[in-house]
Length: 268
Image (cartoon, rainbow, N blue to C red; front, side, top):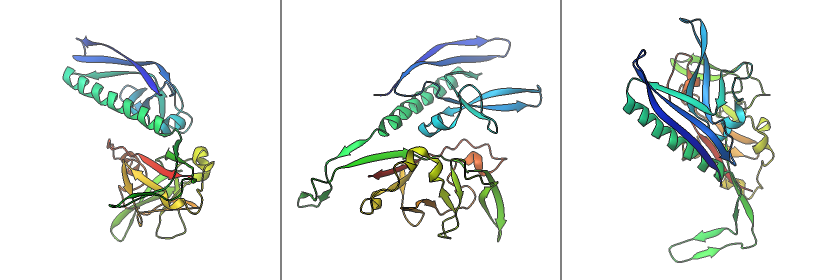
């Protein structure tokens, strides 16, 4: 079982700034990383310094992706175990705190779902009966979160009056999504070779690959929008705002707060 032990320290009031502060610290964990808060290091041009801004609770994929305490070269995101929330409205701080609790609980659920689930057969269910087709068929059920970022830079371009995007400065040594060539109707392909967890398990056998499906924010996306075969995972839509990475990547001027969670579900 995964567990997160979080300390919330009492709100303090800064009379000079006219705002309230709340301090949250993950003091210990079980079967999950301790540094679970994502921060972004941004340049403050007014003060001529850098500031670390809390962004979100990490997903299992981001735990593997981001360094601890400071960003790696070429990145601005990192993980930490302590954050300070500031607002002039104390009720708003409470709302944010409750949201963080829910996100941490979801993280625990996601971590536990990555554990292998054993199955004891394939069941055929009708209104008349439930038939076990093959009791000897023993498989393992996997739920693997995918990296939701381009393996390079997002590039917005215009074609026929419509805006689309593709991966510029593509680097196939990076995790994430790359431009796809074939089948031509699918614009992106998951860089499976650089996802060490998934690469070690892929592909499932021919008779089981049909059970594989991709969940986008908890909703299963089916063909023709997604193609899954022995060669990998393909994404069809490349119109602006519909890439396999979050809203923040779509446009450098877009500071949206939408998140995107991709989970590959399959048996092997």
